[in-house]
Amino acid sequence: MNGEKVVRITKTTVTHLLLAGIGFIWIYPFVWMIAASFKSPSEFFENRLGLIPQSPTFENVVRIWQKADFGTYFINTIIVTVFSVILVLIMTMMAGYAMGRFSFRGRNVCMAIFLASIAIPLVSTIIPTYEVIKGMNLVGIKLGLILSQAGGAHVIFLLLFTSFFESVPNELEEAAKMDGCNFFQTFFYIMMPLSKPVATTVVIMETIWAWNAFMLPLVLTLNAPASRTLAVGLYAFKGENTVDWTGIAADGTIAIIPVIILFIFMQKHFVEGIAGAVKS
Image (cartoon, rainbow, N blue to C red):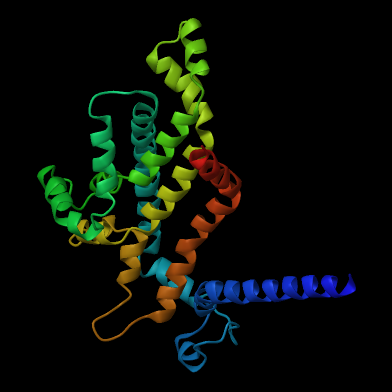
């Protein structure tokens, strides 16, 4: 019995050590980035892999905020992220409700097209998206960034809502109809509150994607620096012959903080949303 206990404890210890090692490897780049943001340029090159700055300084943060127009990029990113999340949430929720609760001609074809679109690389859609935004005279302004970010297929979100709404008992809709609710009242007062866990998951995932979006904002703001987002502004620290590594580290550190805070406060709903959407 003691031998079995020793073996079990040994296995548990080895497993924990292995997971701790994997966790350290995964989190090391983020910790290194935070440490680099508080290093001077000279210390950065002298102690590249060190995680503890010898002479911590806030010079990099002050420099990017005052001289690199970081505040404007930050505000632009918040605006683009918030409104794109709202649009994506509304579109995918309503489309998921239609796909999950109603049977209509062409439903399977629509679902097949949505699933097939997952295989289309994002890069291949940049030119058509740019042409559409250009035709609307929205290139270089925040509204164009919002529509381009929210205008994707977002198939994953659609599938999450579709799967969730399919699992909702029909009795709830029937009871709502007996109480006099029409189609829209049933959707707003019954289905939307029930889909809160999935909606939270969509909000978190879309916030991360919109916050970190780079390629489309770069193309749409090439000639409009005042409308650039954080990801594009970070790219500006790379010059033709030199790279401001400490500035990039400070930019990346500040940019990632809102996403981490959002996930920490909403991770419970995120897990519930994934579990509720995939359960059969």
